[in-house]
Image (cartoon, protein in one colour):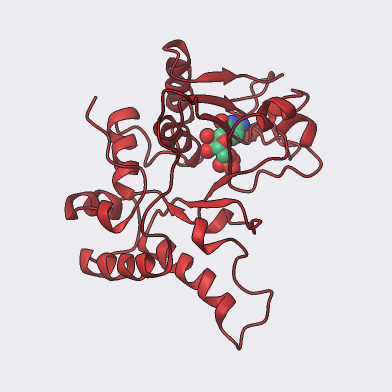
Length: 260
Ligand code: C5P
């Protein structure tokens, strides 16, 4: 497998025009590389210019829990186990309040894109998955809104600006080409989170991925009333992603907790 690019976008790890071309292919935005570069420059002025990740060390095992949103978490009692991990990464809007027993209540990182964004507390890293230039513009606006005098408190996103991390489009391309073998339009937030965690942690435990015991692709925080939604995974190749996760588990690259 080809060597991976760094997972996060920084001035030192900006993307090439070739990576940009792949990225533009997954979006409707027709603006060119120069617009991207100017937008990225603004992003680098506002958000951390380097990513502070715990370094590998022989004396320490960095543990990560990646918590997907599958209904297989319901009834699992995984909460305390999830909270034992140093890093707990949740995805999109997956709530903890009211579900603590099964999903835990610690969140160190939350992976999201603009449509799924939720307010975060001051100690949680916002990990943005940008699928287009507009998503980077959204990030700038979401934080700028908070600092404008004319804007009331409710506007913008509440999160700690100094803890923002942005997944690199080059890393998305790498996952799409090398892991998904170009299946689907682009990888889901979930699979990209699992793969970047392998770079961040020595031990990765994966929770809340896959269908529930009845084969239904649901969320732990929603009741599926319409069974035709079964295995609906949008633009993402759900079964290929499930196979990759199973394969990583078989090869002992991750621990997989399949739920109840
Ligand atoms: O539905 P949502 O995209 O918010 O879920 C976050 C991630 O959790 C997905 O990208 C997917 O990888 C995973 N998931 C899953 N099985 C489900 C629901 C979500 O594997 N039933």
